[in-house]
Image (cartoon, rainbow, N blue to C red; front, side, top):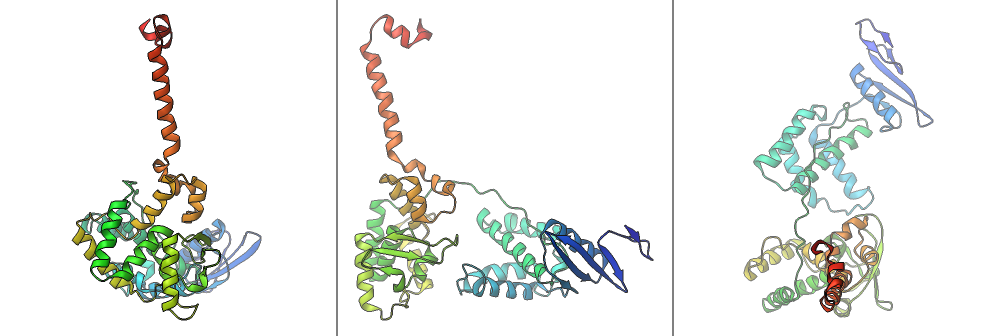
Length: 365
């Protein structure tokens, strides 16, 4: 280390050049360099280079404000990044929450640990948002900072917001009786298209975004397979059509022209949501019944029918088998065998007399 004219200690790997600071360090076999306006920025860059968090040549940070960082990050998410959907609308509400709290013109450098923690408190104590919603907002704030940092538009180290522990709770799924009630409501109110989509979600277990993106190019009617290319986990998978899904898709193929057309393009997503909420209220279902419940229903039915857990994991597209194991209590065979074993042992015990009982029950001896 060396001292500059202001008696500031300059770490090894940083050199002062005029009014700026030059960072030069070997990281992962390559020399990484950067030019920073202040010593604090240079030290921050040096630390990230050493941790392998930052690569490439960076010259002169030009820090974005929150609005600019958010717009650029979302454009990257929906147009360039893996699993990009081309749909920025689903981020609109999250963007409003973040910009309204921090301020559109606030510099990203001002997102300190203190005010990010205040954002956490605001979401949990004042807004009382769920753990999953709070954690997702925190992830978006961090990823926005990280995106700007890697492109030279944030001079400080990105700040992570603390996360809340998710509670497992009960797994809400649709029973056979509830399914009949749901489909009856849709059909009697003239929403047959929505009823078809509900059946599709229940029998395929697809995520909502996967189902609404599906095109006829993704369907092989000869083999009965549906290919899902854009997934949450970035691992394409294929599933087989049930008899009623095949009937629905065959009918839609006659209505929709062009294989590149979306299978359910005739159903507006917002309208589908409004009809779903109306159905839920009309039928008196609890608020835990959401559209994603249909995916839960497929998983529970697969396991309940005796499909092994590995095959179910592949069908559902779970990246980790632990996710599938959350539904393991729906696997009947092993637990049923355990009960039978206890029953058989009890029957054998009841047939024994005298000393034999004392052998089986040594505590009574």
